[in-house]
Image 1 (cartoon, rainbow, N blue to C red):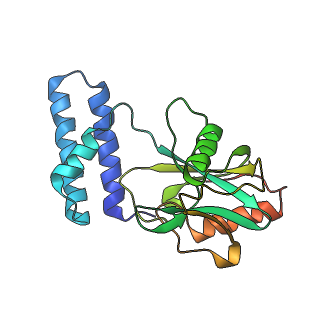
Image 2 (image 1 turned 60 degrees about the vertical axis):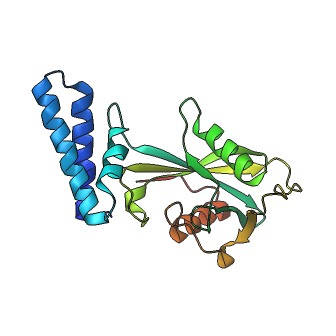
Length: 205
């Protein structure tokens, strides 16, 4: 779970964002703006982040505040799972990323696998929908839902883009160092359980 200060920040920011979306009275808008600045002050004070950067991050969020959606693809070959190297931290994750407006979760997963590994896949099943805050990830300033879809290789003999060199299959017992902001050991272990027992229902928080 997030530390208390981050929970407070998320709550205050969502209230301020919703208020600024719907409030018409200028005095109400001023109060919601002040509330947003309190959220920024808390985030900046506890995280060490620059006040102006946090303020800009929050002010770029418009409309009714809802969780962001992170879609990840579980691509298996025999008893190994496809992982990609994240350039941001030099660690490994499942292919995936933020859902784009206008795409279905399946389209996001298939596109991300192709872009990040060079493999062509087809999404075939929902494995899990998790609340990121409950899965042991490092904290983020936004509330996130994580969707894990199983994707089948359309050509099991194909290889990742040789120019990339940042995609490989790993057995469960020999996983590389994980990018924990994106995926955890427990999540991958659960995906392997789904592989070994396809009758398991999709997980959800």
